[in-house]
Length: 494
Ligand code: BES
Ligand code: MN
Ligand code: ZN
Image (cartoon, rainbow, N blue to C red; front, side, top):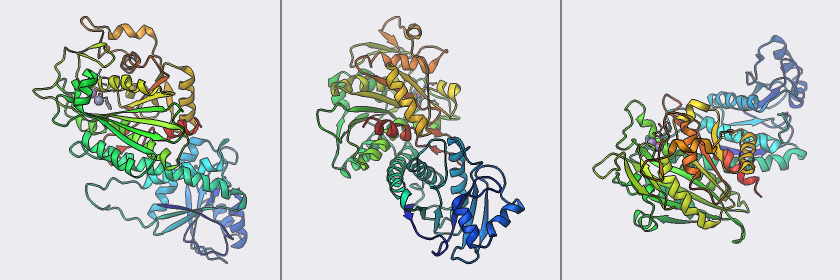
């Protein structure tokens, strides 16, 4: 979809469809009042009849507006004035794009600058609009070539006057960059396990770096990881015919001396569980076990596009978790790059095994902060459902920065503790630790395991198992989360 600004007199220009907010059943926004006057009260008459229902996002379509060149007006209920919450605004955007894409129009013009949503600025409204319009029109079509859904809509115009122009343009820039990053990440994450292998992730990372002079790529192959002593990472990838890779993307937006922010994504391209094999019914969902890695790719694309003046290291910890004659057995003990040994009691707790060696490796960058992003535990779905991402951190200031970024971008996280009290759950008889912590508090013990490898810097862990994807049905797919949170976190670091 194209997003542009449009200025000028509403009554004069030819318009296929203009979207006009209505505060509640009878109160008109400024542009609505304007059009009402031009059309000798056409809008007021419709509102009076009660066709526009009283829920936010409800719409009524008017055709052939009198005395002007407007083919359609879509009236949208945006709730009572001064009472539009972020949640309602997002709901309106989702409903609106569904209506617009069902109409036989090529472009739609939206009066957005009169909408007031909490204390949000106009550029924020535009950024979110583009984010949700793109989400509402996204389809994964790589495997079938073309879409079977008919849609003509290909341009959204944000109506602006002189005072709103700068903010609208800034919002379009942000929104487009975010949408582009999310689109890339969705296409990578939705690709099935036979296509999306660690080698494929490396290829996608290479393509991203080729397109931007500030991005450069380096890859640790299994032989390199062996030299570095990454026994935990290799314990996961050794069961697969697909070679594991630690893919490192370096974004240089600022002076070399500036410490980088590090993002590490879990990139298990398919998680069978290994010898601790998962059960059949929902195993197919595990194509999404590389969503963390996809979100790192998407975030880097988003911020590099905007030439953000900071340094970032993106790491994709890419491996496939398979059962085979070479696979790790439950009970095997391996040595991590940190020197600590791990008793692998369950080969299905593989995410923490690839991540712990990545966490050790990146300490060489002297990071300003480290965030890992992982579809790590089913337990986080029990705790937080698909609404909030689980957040764990060894630094309260960093945790607050991440929570605030998520709140602002409406890509929310919720913090859980990693108190010492939980550590005994991962004690092992024969090694420094076990890779599982029993039935209780599974997301917390997973985070406690990671914390043992992240002691030398400010670190946070995002468990996105509940928020990254919907596993089945017509809406199946990667959600793009937490790219909006991560890019906002990085904007806030400037
Ligand atoms: N990738 C899974 C976690 C997961 C489950 C993500 C469901 C998305 C949806 C992870 O590797 C895993 O298998 N975790 C185990 C850990 C257990 C063995 C301690 C789990 O959550 O069951
Ligand atoms: Mn697993
Ligand atoms: Zn997994």
